[in-house]
Length: 171
Image (cartoon, rainbow, N blue to C red; front, side):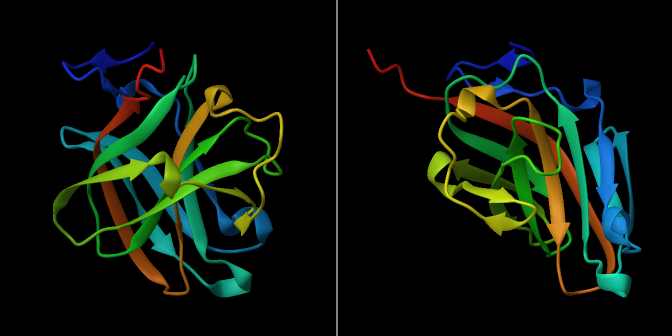
């Protein structure tokens, strides 16, 4: 798999080598704006959230091949702005595809957040759905971050590190 493995077999996902795409609410007529960039600190996702024209979300995502395999959790090291964000996994880039989201809050300081498998829920376009048969977490090929809020204004999230924690050996 792509990335570094540490002694506890976690896999660090190399964020800077991925092809990141910004998707804002402009796809629905909104006016939010965002950019994604790299710094020595990590992946920088920042912009301005607008509620005009029914807007209120901004996101970034990137393809990740060959996928994530069996996993029990993801561990994020981030510095945020006090807002709640979502970490998302997807099996397809189609907007109508199921995404698996886990929400996490930031507090303005560098923090490490563990998101166990149980923290993820299936959603389509932000609405929770039952997990669909035939979709396996092994098929996830995209990862990303999303901010959705009813609070307009600037936002900033620095992602220092993302680790995939593998599922325990079941044998």
